[in-house]
Image 1 (cartoon, rainbow, N blue to C red):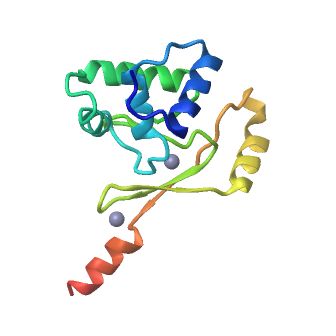
Image 2 (spheres, rainbow, N blue to C red; image 1 turned 180 degrees about the vertical axis):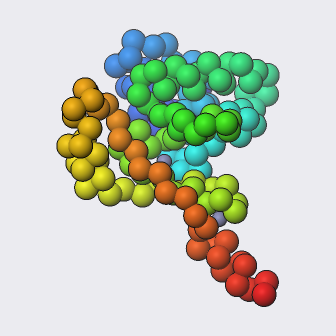
Amino acid sequence: MFPAEDSVFQEFNDLCRKLGWRVTASRLAVYRYIRGNRNHPIVDEVWKAVQRQQPNISRESVYRILTDFVSKGVISLIDRPNVIARYDSNSQRHDHFYCLRCGRIFDFNIDEVDEIVRSKLNKFGRVDRVEARASGVCQECLDRELNSK
Ligand SMILES: [Zn+2]
Ligand SMILES: [Zn+2]
């Protein structure tokens, strides 16, 4: 049924068992693409990649699978106002640097940010998630600008 029963398949199989889900070829294909993907893809990028294995899969199905993954904490959703949803394969707490030139989003991790924000926000109630956002111009874009001068 599944062409490649490799370690990713095993991992996904275990995950589905834990979540009480059926392993479907579509879910597996989405998982394969998103797992370890550090590019914070939007739904259309995931869809395009998954179509290579599942030519008939609809955008809606991919979107629904991603939403299910988010609801179970398998991946997370980056909520950036006014832009298309992006998904993050890294469900561990981490921070983001947005390059305003090329639009890429980079991961970084400063644990102190988490501690400081939590300690300052506990008066508001329960803090579930802390994410620092920084924006600017990434090194690659800076180099490109320098070289074009
Ligand atoms: Zn950049
Ligand atoms: Zn990230």
